[in-house]
Amino acid sequence: MWNAAIHDALTKIKSNIVKHPGKLPHITEGQRYEWGGNDDWIEGFHTGMMWLAYEYGQDAFYKDAAESYLANFRDRLERHVALDHHDIGFLYSLSAVAQWRVTGSEEAREVALQAADKLSKRWRPRIGIIQAWGKEEDPENGGRIIIDCLLNLPLLFWAYEQTQDRKYHDIAMRHALISQKFLVRGDGSSYHTFYFNTENGNAIRGGTHQGYEDGSTWTRGQAWGIYGFALAYRYTKHETFLDTSKRLARYFIERIPEDGVVYWDFDVPVEEGTPRDSSASAIAACGMLELLEWLGDNDPDRDLLEDGLNRTMTGLVEKYASTDLAEAEGLLKHGSYHVRGNRAPDDYMIWGDYYYLEALVRIDKGIKGYWYE
Image (cartoon, rainbow, N blue to C red; front, side, top):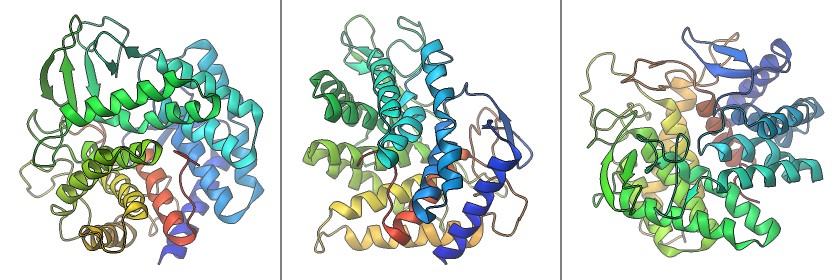
């Protein structure tokens, strides 16, 4: 089952490269991607898939394609194009860091270190957070964190390993700790976002941007938490990060629908036509795989995690993958971007495609993503 799914994915990735040379995918409507420039938070997922494809089959076509984008990412960084956000980690872990990990390119390493510097400038010491969105002192976003940022922290942990400059490690560690304290609720659910007073750092309130309502649990946010805290544990060996990831995973797994793929929010009323989010399930699967690597054979959560992973990946491959659509640009059907904002509530999501492929090649050949060595 995994081999057939991977073969289909690699075929579609190659087709996209050939049909849209030098361009990058953007989310739109109509079961397709809109291909254009490098000015969003999602472009790294496209190059990340190329590197996974190359590692899986050693086809130099994917390596050459991925390497051709490095100048584009370097140019974006140097010109500060649309980088007033924390998703620099998503962009550069799956482009420059990935290239360095696979090829040893010093040029890619330097671009990645410049990206880590750019991300570290979003640290707000007065509050103790990496500001998610907007410029410093932004009246709406100046004191806001969002759970997605946990997947940006590996860029900083990597930069610390490369340079031994403690600032990268300390920023990432402190942000992970404050995320753990304020984004994770007592029952293992999560807030999407949390606000702090920009003057004194006092906590104000939890809320959401893309979830059903402020007190609900947005499934993609929960998935970011599962994988993000597991990765924070990998870098720091801080035991509470592993425990937090497990708690988030239990909450997620206990709410997986019968067909294996979650709705867009765990608290949304489920009716005919309620959108799913296959991308949330793909991210969560990667988080479960990461967790399972750290749990002993006798860990009480191991069986639950293995069952949750199997149900999720079986559901994605058998019911949500676009294997029945030869001309499809995306790998996973029925992803959702921003349901409340009526932005692509049921379509292909490039990050869903990436995490789906990452999970598949990790299961099949032990090939991991580019969040760590």
